[in-house]
Length: 169
Figure 1 (tube, one colour):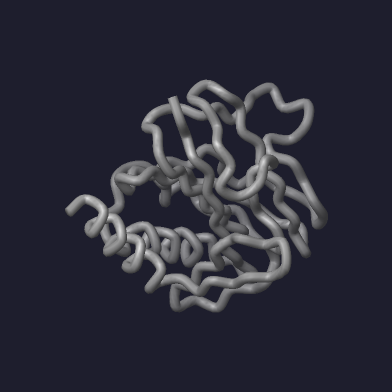
Figure 2 (cartoon, rainbow, N blue to C red):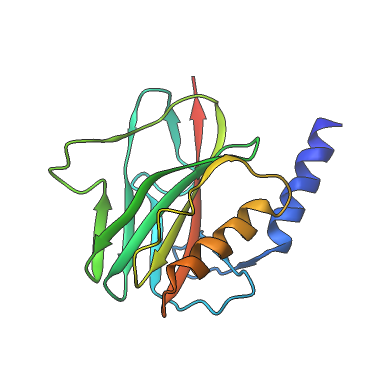
């Protein structure tokens, strides 16, 4: 029963997505009824998509942008609980490791265990403080909230990519 529910939820999530596969790329490209630019060309954990991390370990991401802009990162667990952990980070065009080298903080893996999705949202202008990612999003709620986030930024260029990794105790 639980497996059937998980498969149904996964199918629902993918119904709002366009899966784009390129050689060496296993990320999801998400569409929201908004025109997205192809700005994020790579987004994945440094160990690769689907890698395994233990609770308490640091995790880093590699992101490649075709143009300079603002990046917000949102973690989403299996229960739909979402929380942004990087907001309006300005990055020039090129390939970057996040958190940036020399940062006084790190991204640390925490409970719950299971699949952890991470959504990277690129906007050419910073998003306003009025729209935040925090809470549980059911069904297509995360995609609707992402579309609202993008609309409120009034960005001329915007893009969204998603990757994942596994958290174990």
